[in-house]
Length: 289
Image (cartoon, rainbow, N blue to C red; front, side):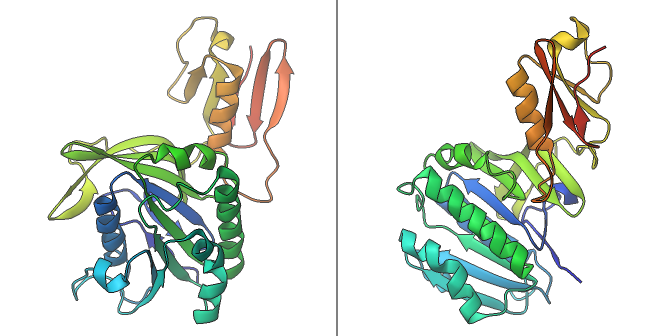
């Protein structure tokens, strides 16, 4: 039976924290201390019998990992990586040489600004390679990236919807943080374009008490993505309608909602006069009366 792991933010619903095997999730964190804390709480959130490997870049794992005896797996495989691009390139081979990766959760804590001197092409190539590796070995991979300008990595990764099961950022906002989800795919479905307030204190990471507790529908079967001109100035006809000002926005929204399946066809584009309609089977469509 395939394992399902969880992100270390308590009180989140399953759709935005579960991580089943076969996928890769990328989480940007704008402060390294927060990245270390979330790394530890994610380790602690796993079941006692889970197979988990902690990969620490630029530091010794014993200097980073801080767990009590009542939380987390009974055993955690520890790896350290030098803070250099070559270590990231060789990580997949090194892991296979050390253990059988099947049904493992690999959590990579990147060194601060580790990707700043790696161009976008190489970043995306690494993500695609990691995705193929995780699917082949039936394991889960979470990369926690800390950088002063996390948008430098976020922007190119928005195109990697076929390789990443999840892409999100945690941004510091004074006494709280914003959990900004571009998309998050799990065994429960997919959630996209969510911004949740989370708190971090001595009690750990958790959803803020006054945060909205409703989750996006687990299925997008009723969602309608439409150009605003289709309704000729009328408001959305129901909660399932989302209106956009341009065709590009319609297309990009449909692409973000599309489930990540390597065998799935690309969304079909059909011209309706000056408007483009996006048809994603059983997910979303834009219609004209």
